[in-house]
Amino acid sequence: MSKIAAHIVVLASISLISMGIAFGAEAGGHVVKRNAAGGISGGSARGIKGANGKAATMKGFATDGKGNVAGGSAAAVSTPSGTKAARAGRFTRGSDGTINHRSGMAVTGRRGSAASSGSATKDSSGNVSGERSTSATSSSGSSYQGDTTYNKSTGVSHSGTCKDAAGNVVSCPK
Image (cartoon, rainbow, N blue to C red; front, side):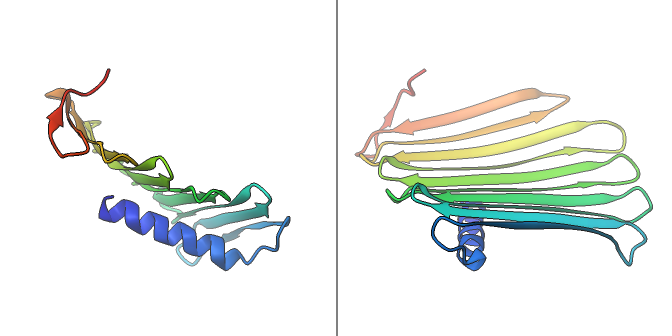
């Protein structure tokens, strides 16, 4: 699991715990207000816990009144069987048209684990690029590691490696 994905799981798990939701209960709220930068800030959070597990989501944004905005969101779920999953993302948009996005996810359960993280950018001239790394490991020990990149001049590039439980490189199933 990548460092970013591990941090996502930790932060999302903390959010589930900090919600302190009673069994069978649901809680949430939101706020929007003017901020000191001359813009608007807002956010919301929601959590639920019941017989089928628990889940929490949160999102927020802030503007500065000059055309810049930043925001992010996160979510986490946990099931009674022990499966845990989380995702988080953040973005910025500059008044010059630049955009930056970064996100990641992680899941772990009795059949294995997977994690993915990546980013995308657009500069003020409209050039777009992005990348994503994904890894997965089954409970039997077989694994996949893949990387995908994109930029305007070279297009999409992908590389992936599959390994059996002994660590031998094998062909990836299609």
